[in-house]
Length: 296
Image (cartoon, rainbow, N blue to C red; front, side, top):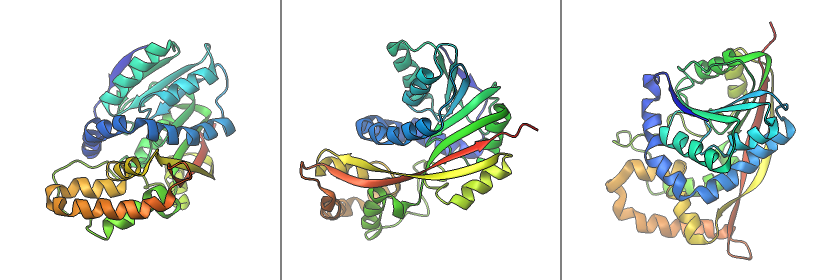
């Protein structure tokens, strides 16, 4: 198992990489129990319906903490191998450490901007769980992924559907936007095009077609999302991660005086999602996207 730095980053992706290796990493660590716990079932469903074959070589794009890479490593078995890549070094460092602690030997990790880096194929299968929506130029990135696949190799990726289909995002966003809006000028880095950049099925199909993929298919996957074990945790999540949180973060001190009112309004709206045991559960919706690198 090893971690390597694989090539330079595309300048247009520098801001997103700064965000993911900085404030977003810190917040993902803080809410990891909720985020990974809710994202993993979407990835597991994708792998259940489109599993890689035992003994194959797999590329995990945007591997994050590396939990998906470990799951894939178990599927391909000791005769197979998984390479997890992420543009944020701190995520890759965590992924490497945790895979080593778990004794997973058939996985390695690299810090790489998929738009620019040589991906050292060929791979039989490429997977991504919420890792392909943040590229400045997704066609270039996915063209690079396709080039690393063997002829006939498959891509399977999970991306968010539209915000209105994701109640865990939409409710909080509407509340925050009733108080303020995304500023035109800001000092904080953002996550690039954002998590919902592939929400439109036609847009995503067009990106993959332009990248050279064929046999493109999208299947909807709806699952409940635990936003918090109680209302306080759920409100903190909304104010820390996602589109509503990014508006708050980019506004910074300019809206400090509004934060108590925003928090109170969020409590009122998100509290409507409270279950009998006090947890906050909302709907989440993704596309499971599959495509093939043509044989000729």
